[in-house]
Length: 126
Image 1 (cartoon, helix red, strand yellow):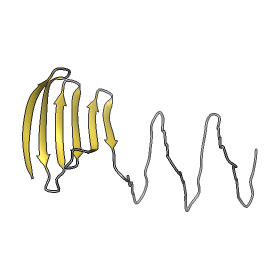
Image 2 (image 1 turned 30 degrees about the vertical axis):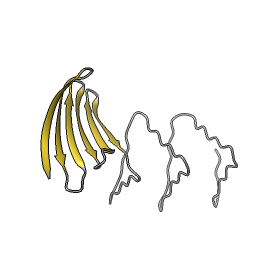
Image 3 (image 1 turned 90 degrees about the horizontal axis):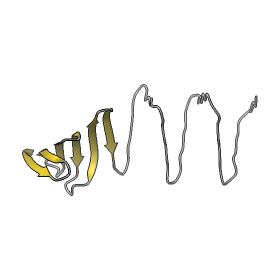
Image 4 (image 1 turned 60 degrees about the horizontal axis):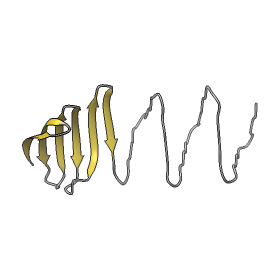
């Protein structure tokens, strides 16, 4: 592992300081300090950005980019936010070996260009 620091002046961002740590695998960890904040970046040897943590006045923003993202926990994974978006270019699947509970305070809008199937031993409506 080796590292270095670079200082430069960007016409748009002002003074910029970059510290690099080059990894034996060819990847790089960089800390970038600019007038709009600091960020930590992890990139591949060809400079493709895999992970970035931007420190903003509202709090840290974490960005991940890769072929797969795997989260695993022995007990629990929690998401808590004002808004949650999940988008899939192909299929989306939710499965549980236990119960599945969806608690909604407002309307539910379910749309499909194809058939909708609801299967169960007993289906209760209202």
